[in-house]
Amino acid sequence: MFALGICSCFCALALASWAVARSRRLPLPPGPPRKFWFGNEEILPWVHPWKEFVIWSKTFGPLIYLYAFGRDILIVNEASAATDLLETKSTLYARRPTRSMVALTGRKDNIAFMDHNERQKKARTLLQGAFNPRAQKSWGPVLEEETTNLMLQMAQSPELFKQHIRRYLGSFITRFTYGTKVDDVALKLGDEISVHTQQALRPGRWLADTIPLVLYLPDWFPGMAFKGWARDARTKFIEYTARPFQEARSSVLNGTETRGMVPDALSDIITGASKYKEEELVSAASSIYTAAIETTYAVFMDFLILMMAHQDVQQRAYREITSVTESTRQPLLSDMTALPYIDAVIREVHRFNPVTPMIPRSPVQTDSYKGYRIPQDTWVMFNIWAMTHDANIYPDPHKFLPERHLPLGHESSAKDPRDFTFGFGKRICPGLSLANAQIFLFVVQFLATFEIRPPLGDDGNEEEVVMEYTSSFVSLPLPFKCRLIPRSGNAILY
Image 1 (cartoon, rainbow, N blue to C red):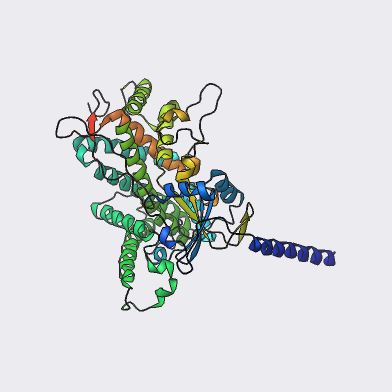
Image 2: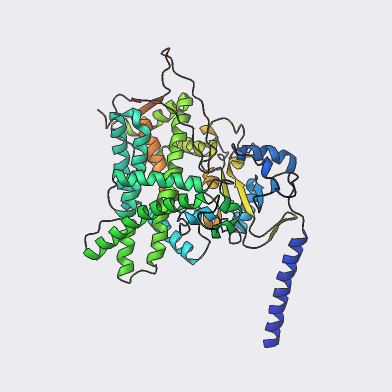
């Protein structure tokens, strides 16, 4: 039996070695020709690259191989390929690409950027437990209260709608995470952190991401100014995340804590009643702001500009809301299943301009797919925008059509674009349940409270709505103005 076991192990190892050797003999996926020293750096698109890669796929197919900034890059434009790699091979592709600037700015223990290790898995589990629908009885009333307060604030000063929305997002996340109220200092610091994160993630901007060896050069060496910027970003990130965590810890020890994800979990950890460690809770808590604020804010801005541009959609959505509430109350989370057209509008907002148009992964070992080789540590960029604009999945993809998500007779509705926009496999967004609830409540209460109209021009007529989007890691509409007209008879304004 022992000899048989040794033989079996030898055969398994031999088979694995053969598979790896075979994959290394396979060709790389097709792509544009590259220069000897600089690869494809000169032709990389920087303005809406996700759209440009769709054009390239007509020449090279759905998988496009590039070499730039010292690394292998694979663009995946096809939904089926994303499912094959991120779902079927979820463990192999569970790692994010390594970014030196992310680590320098203090985000290395943020679950969005950590390797798929034990600390990351436990931090994700903590978040999933706090966010899931079963926990809604604790965070649902807080979310409804904060959202209704937002509507009142915007009615008082509608021209400041963007500032009100950012404060609302920061206020709810702070109450959810720590059980405390947010102050203006923390809000300003949180906004700075969001900007730093976006800048640290910009591809091709940082020498440290291209040539990590420069990290060992002294600060006074030419070209090392990024180190000072990163130190300042890291200091502010630590200040923003460490202070409220330590305050929560002190409140638990003093017996004065309020309800929130961190104090609730800390109580169990400190008393030894939890299977988690404090460092895992730190990773979970420090990840919430950067993961929740910017992406949710981008969805809200998408919604507002799309409603301005599609008044017919806005009117139909409002009619559905009043059919349920009869304008006697604000819609609540409990109304979600009774408002299918609202759900269709939200799905189409996600589809029309996915706020994270491309998501990166990196295989932990060399892989093969459809006869091609994918080298270990390749930056595999999954083009979410291409998938939500695939005419085979969504006919007329460049039109904003919520109706595509409603059942027609016996036919099923279109694929839910949130299956793409919230990620795949082992890195799927752990807070999607709460995100869906917050987006629903914001959309439904906004439509119930205000009519969203374009601003007036100098001639007194409404200006044309121009929908243009940023090319950043989190994509959102370029700055715009709108008019928020309170609806007569609204339950909270009159």
